[in-house]
Length: 454
Ligand code: GLN
Image (cartoon, rainbow, N blue to C red):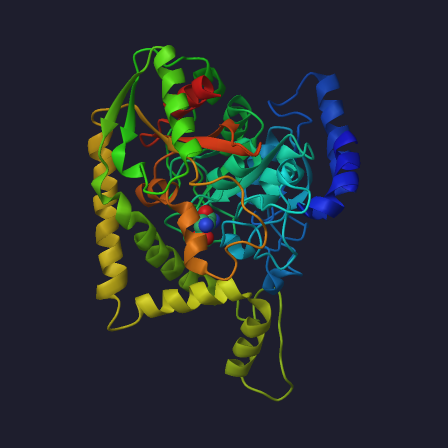
């Protein structure tokens, strides 16, 4: 009830929730109370969560932040949200995102932009973005509208909004969480994960969200460890890699200072820091912005006005006309841009030059990490190249917007776990985050290092 009241008070300003399921939440909470009384409480019994509106929730509208799914009510539950319900969680509602999770500012949603709850810390006249695409998830948690939230990360959409909103968030190893029932963006990059106020809360949530699922062919059949226990392990004797290619020209001095501060903290706790090289880092952004739109253009072909959501038809016209009208009315500008880029790089005559080449570079980026993780146990970098920016900034130039993802996309291309940890404030009092990367399926070390920084 306290969280529902907080949503009522603050959501009109933040626009974090697209759908509030108050009645359902209270019924779930009642059932939780009953289970507690019976002594059969699950690990998340009664914990109020927000669900990114990209996860299908049975009987609850799931929009993907798009007009084309504006009236879509899934008849089934995603595996991740089903796992959370199994463990006793209470769902407060669905939270806003960039349309189809494409963006870094949560300004492309058909349901309007989300505001970063830290906005006023900066300047009363400037409304700041919460980051994206999981801007609603991060804003809801940072503003105390939910104890935690589900999110997804294709190129940084968990870590970047977490960093912008001063909270923690982890993209686990590709295959750790089932993608079943999550609206697909780029299937070889998409991963679900939690955002929460602390690293330990993320660890608790991830344990419930993760696990093998036969309904997702890329789900990994590996045991799910007690991630929360790993938070307390400490970092004594760990080797921490510091990739020199992440020291970007023109990076704000305070980001560099924060990075050094984080490394100092780790050394003080007994870790050793080592400079490493990830030589193909500079190709990660262009590679990502070929692979992700290519897969998106293929995944989004299913929104044709026939099977899901919106249908715009003219009486007596043909099927092609139905497709064109529906897609023109249903998709926003950024989604259309991605579909066009993706269709182009996959088309005959360009496939080898763009898509195939990007896949080869992706293999080289992955190999960089394999080599680095032969020498170090984790890698620490800044999470983002800047703090949260104003809502009106970077909107007219997509390439400037894409630069936000420079530190986060390599982990998706390589399938590795990446955690954003709140680590400090900039000169204006806005939160900054550091990123911890780890070996595939070694989220435990990532959590230990993140806890030491936090
Ligand atoms: N900002 C990136 C993009 O626009 C990442 C999005 C994401 O991780 N879903 O594609």
